[in-house]
Structures are given as C-alpha cells and as structure tokens.
Image (cartoon, rainbow, N blue to C red; front, top):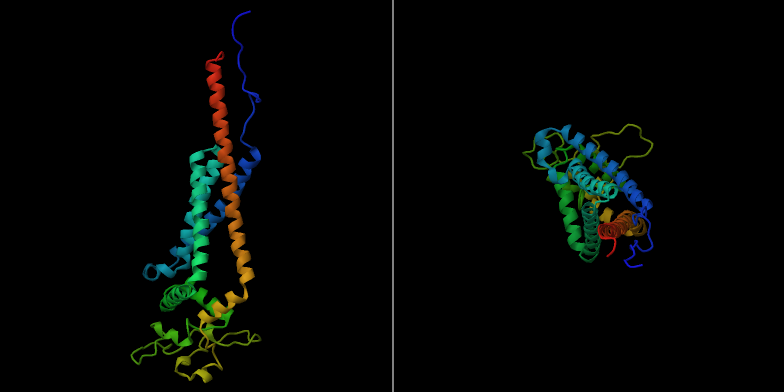
Length: 284
C-alpha cells in the first residue's frame, strides 16, 4: 500500500511534561515564605516612619533603621514576587528577572566581603563615619537612639573612637554656649551598671566628658565602640562565616531552582512546538 506513516513524538505521550511539579512548587513555596517576610519588614518600616515626626525623620534618613527596613523590604518584595508569579505561571521572563536579581545580590555580598577584608582600614573609616553620623542624630530618632543604646550596653563601649565623641551631639556638646542640661554628658548606655540594679539612673553619665580619663573609667565605658566591634568580629569569625553561609545558601538554592525550572519550561515549549508542527502536518 502506498502512502506515508504518521510520525509520533518520539518517546513521549500526549500528557508528558518536562516541568517537574516538585521543582515548580518548591520554588513557589521558597519565594512565598520570603515574600511574607518582606511584607512584614515593609509594614514595620512604614509603621515606624509614620510614627515619627516629619522634621526628625527627614533629618537623618541615612541612619534611620526604619528606612533601612523599608528599602530591604521593598527589594525582597519585588524579587520574591517575580519568583512566586514566575514559578506559578511558568513565566520565563519573570524567572530570569528573579534569577538575575539574586545573582547580582549574591555577587555584591561576595565583593563587599572581599573588599572589606582587603581594604579593612577604608572599611573601618566608613564605619567610623557612620557611627559619628549616628551620634549627631542620636536625639532625632527614637529607633536610632534605641539601637545605639543597645549597641553600647551590649559591647560595653561609648562613642565611636572614644567617649568624648559624644561632644559631636548638640545636646552633649561641651562648649560653654550649650544650654542643654546634658552638656558634656554621655547617654546612660555608656554607664557601668551593676547587674543587681533593677532601676537605672538615666543621668548617670552627667558631666562624664569633663572628667579625667581614669576617673571617668570608674563610672562609664571609656573605650570606643569601633575597637570593641573590630575585636568582636575577630573573635567571632566562625560565627560570622556561618551567618554569611546561612544567607548565601537560600540565594544559591533560589538561583539553582529557577535555572532548573527555566530549562524545563524551555524544553516543554520545544515539545509543544514539535507536537503542533506534526499535528498540522502529520505526514511530514
């Protein structure tokens, strides 16, 4: 008998799909969890900003913890949204955006870590500049104030390089023209407070900058927070390495899953095109 024979798709039936449901929904759940976290961070940041006075909030945007939460929250929200929708809808474009963003963030973290290690002096000067800027705006932002107080009490330190750095703040400035009752003082978080005290004297740092270094050391921490922070980093390199690894692993997992899913979707598209072609021309 003459005539040709209809070709079938080699090795695959009509219901076959290259896209693995495990990879697809694992990537979706992965992104959905971080999307919820980003939404919470963004909400907290927005709420904290709304609770602040406008003038004080605008005065120190660069050292505002609420602003930092909002920026990180927005970035995470956009990236994880692309991952969620891209995986659920099998959209290659959104998945590529998600993958590119994660790769850029991972590389930036890697470069920042390497540069911070190589140019440690430059990194130290930048951190010092940030701390000094935070000291200037200490009374302008309650969130920033709480953060500084927590850091000084946790590390047992005071100021940036030394406790006299608090003279940079207009309220603690030692000039004779300063009318503040906190003139030449330091925050209570600089004070050496015994653990058995249940009530903290918030004026314990009164006039501490006027005292001699040795005498001041009896009632406040005289070492700056920069040296304390550097010593803590040197003593906890394994912990910091573990944290860095803990941050890197989810990013690498996201990149890997998105790349696998992108390749699977591309294979599925090729299969669909193959089937359409041979349905329209069954004798080809």
